[in-house]
Image (tube, one colour):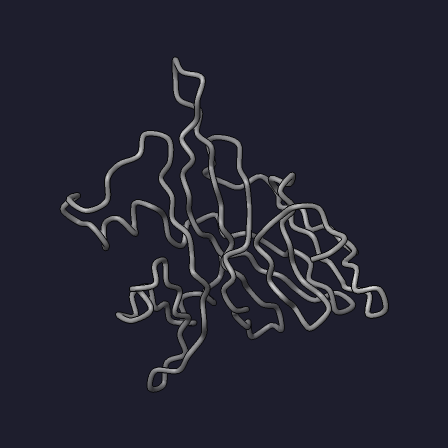
Length: 190
């Protein structure tokens, strides 16, 4: 993305507009647009997340790459990636604990703006380990990180139910693990 500083978590909104997290940002993502004549990308808007409920340490927020989850009120939701850096007592390091939460957006003049972030965790490292390695024999513990990533997310129809397949590993796609019905993703935030 020529013209932008280093970053990650790109989510295309259309052919020339994207959400993007700069490497230097902890609590914000930006909206970027590509100039059709120069092919340079420019930041046109910042979206700053408020402090998240239930977070103990410094937080870094990113995008997971999943599809937009449509809401009946015209808004949409995205699953966001939250990295919480929890300070460890009597040490000089943190433990980075990863989780996913839902964030709701509305369009304002065609550009997304943040409405709210769910105070509840959608999926945490502990949740994934409880399913993937319930006996604790496969996934070795790391003393500095409790990491989960998403490998994207795609909506699909199963009978009468629309779901978001939200895999954490490539194998999850094949076995349809973490296939979340839209009706759960569209419930009101508490």
